[in-house]
Length: 480
Image (cartoon, rainbow, N blue to C red):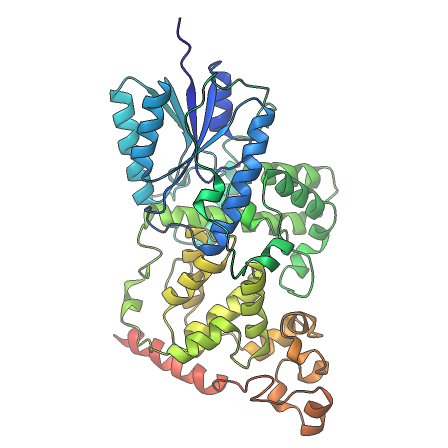
């Protein structure tokens, strides 16, 4: 009797532990084939920094699958075509995958499930990315939430759909003959000349094992300062789990469960634990927004903002991207992003506000730059967060809230350590002037070896004037 294998189609769930689709495949008793399809034809395909992470994440996943007795097959091309080819090549009987929540991807999955089922295969899908499905959390009137606070409250009341840890993955057997596979090197996901990812590689270690270690380190100490320290970019009080979540190297269920276990044991303070979990809830909220609003990455949720008088400012956009605006906290953030593929969340809000409300450049342009340069680029989080800062999204920051880059720097990077780390030209600037070097007397600048306009740029605009211009633009559409 022929024993037909089953296929696990990996997407943004590159892990062994707490992976519902993989566990179901293992429980089937049939030989298991892991498959990853590199489909750059998808809507919002991965940016350059994410492709670097993907390369190393897939290498890690491949090693882990081999430990439990099977292999990861790599194929490049259109998802539907490739999956059908692998099914035909292997005579697979079942296909398992964890669900996606972006409309164009959902349509691909729906059609594939219908076609494969008609061909006699069994297709099973699971929630491997969220605590709760978007359609499970509804308002009293049965619709989706548009405000985060009540959404978070409802999510906490429900808790994760799965509370128990999935049984540890036992050894499973792959088929005696595997289908043909590409190699990662053939995909050219990582840069060679020039190798712009050198510092990213020094900062991060992708993979499921690293994700678990990072969670443990965070819960062992830094979380004790999370509520008050999370807004300080000069410290290490954040979890930095975002890229691991984006690629599914760790599940939100595991993070939720482990944090609650520590809180229940009295090892973590309630205030710090709750504040951390609220960030996981924001990720869920963003996914819900994208699920119900598939144009979230392109169009403002509040349509009145479609007519905002944006300005075409190529020089300003270039200075912002390069971290050469003359505002130290903004420049530090943009250089941290380019060097490490990541930026502290408080600074993300500051640099986004500067682009949108000081330079009057479309939020979509900033979103696109983040998408290409962040190792934690997540379609839902990226779009929802940019719309929040712009004031045009769900539960958005008020349009009149315009971050002052000087006072934000003075408040959250008090001694200027963050700025000095990423803007070394200002390393010798005294604390008093580190966030506004143009205000320093000539003798102070000379001692700090700073020549404005040469070693460090003058501000490309006056924030006070820019604020008035932005408010005028917002009032214009408000009156309409």
